[in-house]
View 1 (cartoon, rainbow, N blue to C red):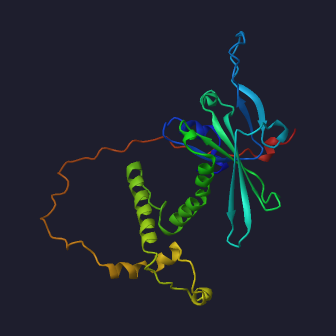
View 2 (view 1 turned 135 degrees about the vertical axis):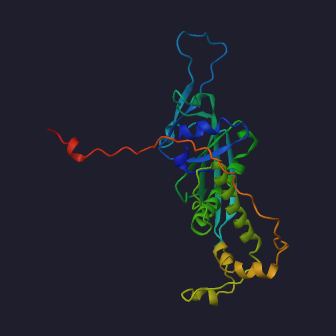
View 3 (view 1 turned 135 degrees about the horizontal axis):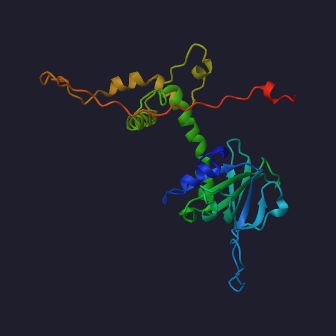
Length: 280
């Protein structure tokens, strides 16, 4: 799942190379897509380049929309008891324009429109558009795709909390393998906070008076981390005390470590000064 910044062909074109990956991204409401052109088998072939794209599908112009291939209605109730209905419309075999490096005409996708309505059938928010692309996308229903994308907001919280509290991006190393191992450690630490949520005690700061009076406060990862030092002392450890196994010989005399591979320095292009843009 990703936001609209990742709905471009340079990102999606790399994801479709993996057979078992289905990508769900949000798209802006001003994008233009096309129906996949299907030639009539009885029609005679013409000379020239074969046609790839069919009718235009402009997201901001409902006159270009065709009837959706599937429509699902999902009722749900908000925390305040408000009854709403989610209308999920899906168009299959859609295409986006490609480039020389990314032949997007070979990778059709399913386009979803999400509309939330109240009991009077009035639209609550602006319609949301999603792209579902991948060779195994048909194994997911429209409702599954919508529910999967809703989990993106939980993932965003994980990334924010991991960067601010778990040092997710603080480990700097030129070795990609070491960086991946560090990222896995931060995920394991987040899982430990989730597993210890029922053992945590709320420890409010001096300025957090609302935590002292509210007995039904939701235990967040930040509150669990605040009390985690006490939790691990009560659990104990199965680790044994270290024993000396001799003295390390260290590096052999005369050993020289191979230097790291040097890469070219990538510099961002400087912005053109406004003086050069002025007319003479």
